[in-house]
Amino acid sequence: MDPDLLAILACPAEHHAPLELDPAGTELLCTECDRAFPIRDGIPVLLLDEARHRAG
Image 1 (tube, rainbow, N blue to C red):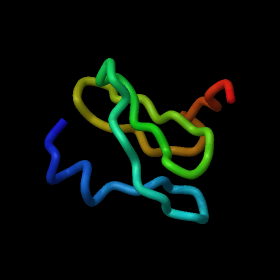
Image 2 (image 1 turned 45 degrees about the vertical axis):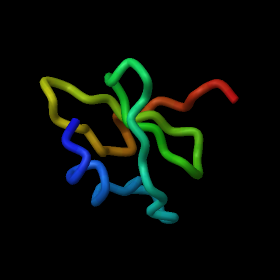
Image 3 (image 1 turned 90 degrees about the horizontal axis):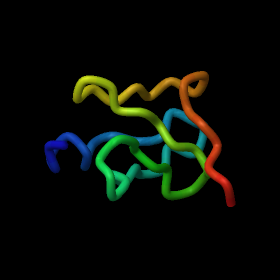
């Protein structure tokens, strides 16, 4: 993922926390809540309904 794009993306939840790329490069991880957002065909899907809750 382009680092410049990643720098401007934020979690769509009310806290709007920064996101980090997971080690596999398949999800964006919220730095504040336990959501993981999928990346499909190189496009981040930042919809709360599409996010999964990571095991904590």
